[in-house]
Length: 293
Length: 256
Image 1 (cartoon, each protein chain N blue to C red):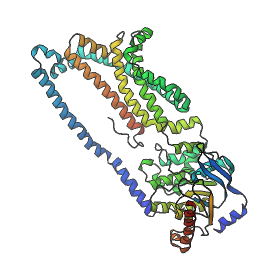
Image 2: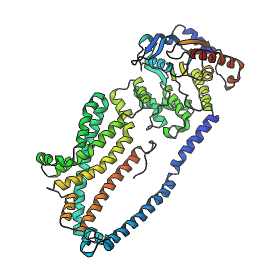
Image 3: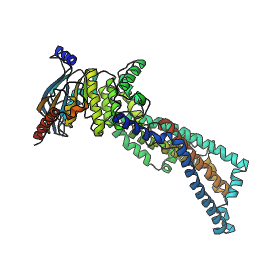
Image 4: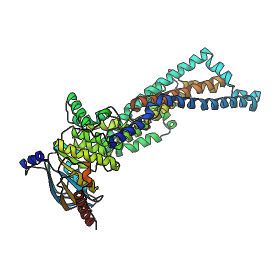
């Protein structure tokens, strides 16, 4: 069949080219954005450090200076003193393990529940109120119960982590599984696709952007969950949360601030890792899936 | 034309698609279609024009089995039914090639076979250079072509078109119309096309049916005598204008 290379095709082509131009120009554009992304926060960071010094030496008199130690002492005692720093690193590693195991369990349970709920409205209606209830329970309220059932070791820390990070995964995955357009479902219906095929080739890929949105939230929450768990359950491995508690009790201001900085660095790293995974997984086709942060 | 006509004659009586006394009342009480009967034979391209919401699309959904009619019966081979949707309904996570392969994949064709069918169909609709593009980088017209190609892979004997070109601009629509009538000629399917554009209907069809406002009924029928292939200039033919006028008149009558 001869191909009509008339205005239509050509206008299509130019349109395709213009829409693709940004993709092609991305490395350059990204470099520009990178410098734009780096300089302003660095400037703000400098102001924050200056403000910090101002408070330490200007506002606080010498007796109360332990409340906010100056940045260079935090660095010297928190990060450059190897025995303290290695203690923090091993605490951080322990908390990271808890967070990752907890997140993995949340993902497993979350996917399973969301998939089952997506198969029948009835199941969704039955399960959903319990999910919301689970989400609404203040973690403090069930800490005694958790320690009663599972003791005060790593297992309990993981359970706290799961309780905190599970909900966004279920909700986002379910929302994603239900997001495939009606017309696409009709297409699969017309061609006699079975439940599993529909799930595998339509609903699950359609859910990926929402799944990643949920994963990023839950990954952040799993770090929070791990640190909160450390606070209550200190047996066995010492997590960074236990260290935070100990430093605070012993008025070790430098170490305390260093541990806080490390904890938030962990949160940011986890969040960015999932952003990066998202770009790799769906960046090619998804309209709005942004960069790593 | 002659070849097509003789083939139609040979199969005379063997309708590809027939509606007998179809009525559709939705659960909420809306009567979408009332007592509608017509047939589409092999070698025919029938277009239904009607006002928005008159139940035109409902007829296609009934034909394809997506909806169950409340009365009457449909006769069609649903195993290899081509259905082109209002939207391109391309899966955004698949490239053009992946999308065009989808139906053959759902029907369990072997990998090599579906690849071959898909590439052939992509070539037919003029998307050859775009097989590895994702839908997000295609224009509306190109998405519709990809959607057409996807349906072509199954070589369906009956093609249902549910207002597929409603969302593209006028010039693109005219080109797609020309290509559709060329496909109709080369693939030899029986076509049932839904639209509310009169010129689109008259340009492509062998027969135009006019449907009334809800509840939809067929109120007029026009044979379109022009031979295929039809050139774009046909749109400036006085006979074309006359037929369009008649269809338009019937459509207006159905509104009041």
